[in-house]
Length: 111
Image 1 (cartoon, helix red, strand yellow):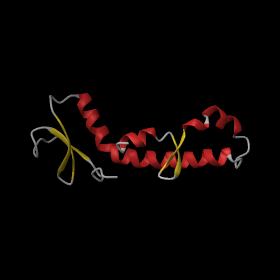
Image 2: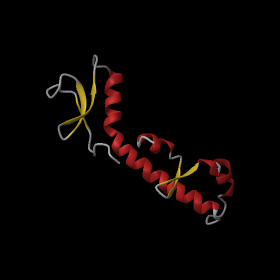
Image 3: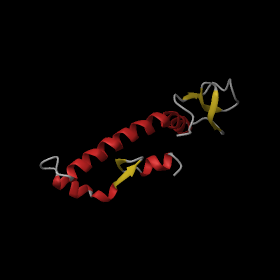
């Protein structure tokens, strides 16, 4: 993964640049133009959380993917109906690991 490492922080001081921005160790990751607004502030907070959200999503997708694979192999009794309702078509493999719904991960990684 080549994105700027975490943590990312929102900087609304406008001391560093003339616009609100998201920074990492003083480097601007993302800059926001326009008038400050609640929507812009919410977007800034979401973007600043992106590295942590991606890491957490990867882990949950990996764990759920492993759970589904084990369920499909009969490791869990009584889970058959749940697996059938979810469907194996949403089970994908990401870096050799089974993942549940890894489309968002692939998008975040530019794939």
